[in-house]
Amino acid sequence: MRVYRLLECESSPVNFSMDENQEMQRQNNRLFDTVAEMKKELKEFKGEF
Image (tube, rainbow, N blue to C red; front, side, top):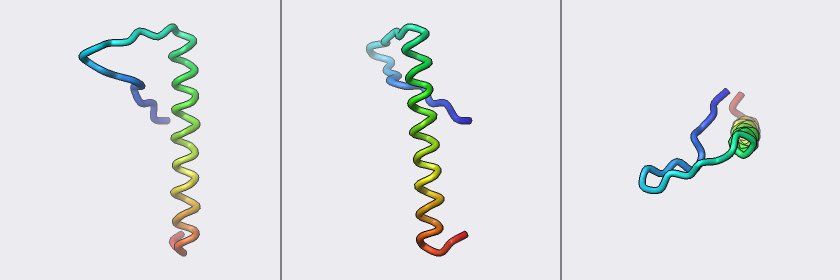
């Protein structure tokens, strides 16, 4: 499972609580899964299996 660093900015670092970090990771994972599903559906729509 891919987890991306969220809101990473070298010029102004932001510290999040552990709970906030976990929630952002959950949201990021849901978005990643949604994009993967959309790509799959698009391939099916185009007739690519």
